[in-house]
Image (cartoon, rainbow, N blue to C red; front, top):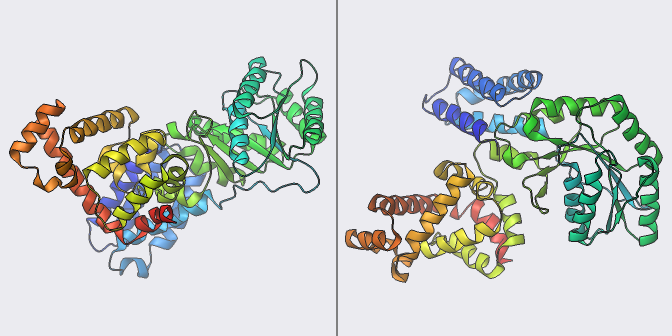
Length: 440
């Protein structure tokens, strides 16, 4: 996600780092490039102006200009301001002590609202909640069947009616939740292709009748400023408590994520990062800022791994990582584990430095990983454990066995050597501490 913005920003930082001691002049030059990068990422112009004003005020000062590594200080300033721009973190949905917690979902057609209802139900089932889904989108008949299908897959009850008005369908859905002992009700309300008076009157009436604890707006992040504009209009008509950004995995720009909190004043609570039912995550501005700046997101990687990866394998890898002793057999095993965790482009983007090393396109990564697996599987056990013994004749044999070229063998060995060197740098620091959670 946000690949184009990440590439442009890291390019700016590299050029600033190459200037040695920075002056106010070349800091401002760098910020002009940041401005262009943000505008090309479809970030709202008002947001860009305010963001750069804050960064400039903090970056252009004696402490920065005279510091030993001023370019790193500017990265830190931009990171802090990105966190401020998208934050604070607020993924919580407090429980209603007087009955089921009611969450009303609203948004335009095509935003992924119905699927997000089911994803949210699954996310909170993992926290111990007992949800009920209410199919109140009678504007799009297929939405009712879609929610029933998703509910059946999750083994979650769905309240649906053949006729009736959405406000009363939602009211009766809450009553059914009480009878069934459900403590969370998620209302899937109607959308339209665009915002109109009929849509807004309907969702306002649903809100008035059901008195929801949370009103979440679901928006498609790939629509950029259109998402921001629709959020602004919904926010003017409804007491929104938060936003859910969908299709973030396909958003290479990031304009909606960087603009929506500033424009609406409402926090981004959750983000959709794929089509599968489990592809909904709580939103943390600091983690997203790290991803945008090419720093990876080790905490989210560990959390995802704890769900999908074999625990014993993870423990062994964490121990070897801590000692900086990973080999090609470990690397092969980790490729297999990563493939279980979801789209490779997402996983690789969470590992510091790996996005730049392997590129960002999913199909390219799948091809690259297939190539790596073929090469490593053509090695002997000794060669995987001790890649330093792979001399010229062994490389030729591996090339023949894997059906790859000798330059590809050389390139893989160099990449692995570079990766191991990078891991050594992280070994006693953040990476090892994060991965160390597996050993507990």
